[in-house]
Image 1: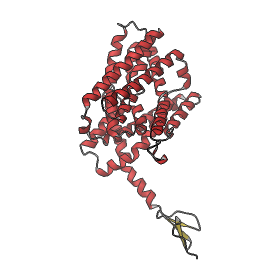
Image 2: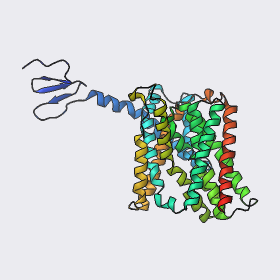
Image 3: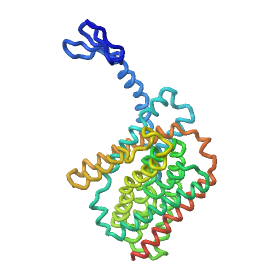
Image 4: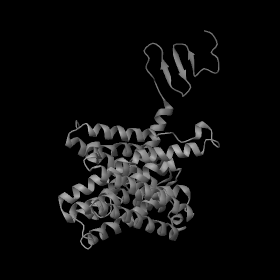
Length: 366
């Protein structure tokens, strides 16, 4: 048998092929006798998946006990507790970090099944324009304020994204494009939880003094409150019709997540074109954003049964919850208190901005 060049990926010995990764393949039947690298990789992931499942279970239970706080917020909080108290062994923590990003992308893709193009268009051009305008102004001004207050470009962008679009889900989707770390994500989620809860309580109390109709209040709540769950809670006092309007308006903001992430990605790519190699630039449109849009399009066809959509929604929350538990576990709590006064100031101004612009738009639309 001839000599095998050393640069080939596999070397033949008798009737077997010894692959570069250590797997031995029998030539007569094509059966792989072993693949140590793949098996080791799978074995390393199991502790992370178990830790993520336990964290998700804890978040679901905590949400049942205190429904005012969403599952995703509980997941981040419990992850921070686990990561800072030594509850996670070193090996489990490393494995959890390895599976977090994949779970995060799965959750963002499945979020697309929550909204359809038809429900958005049914709002009318004026309402859609109000939602889009409020979102853009809030995102741009909040990011600018954060940069002026020296919060850091990534943290400023995440806070702006969370307040302008859809809270924790938007922050998670923007994390990679913004070049943020787990601490930036934790701070952003903490702010949308705190100020979204305040808005959830205050807006219903202001609806009557402001003379808003049920439809106007539904639009105001959907266009300004951060999390979907907070929108439902705020609109619930007005009845099912108000909740329906508020949720559709809110999901219109969710739909705009994809073009916002894509636009930021393009801007960062262009800004870094003279400083980075092509391999290091962010992708023009992240693959998971395309997956999100594909799910929206599929939902819009109406071919997916309601029962299936309910199941998909539960899987989506589970994937995002498990991922955010992993992100929380990587955060050092001490670091969150650095510059907290500036973060609170930016978040306060951003909340006043988004609620003020949305209210003005509602009053103009009549």
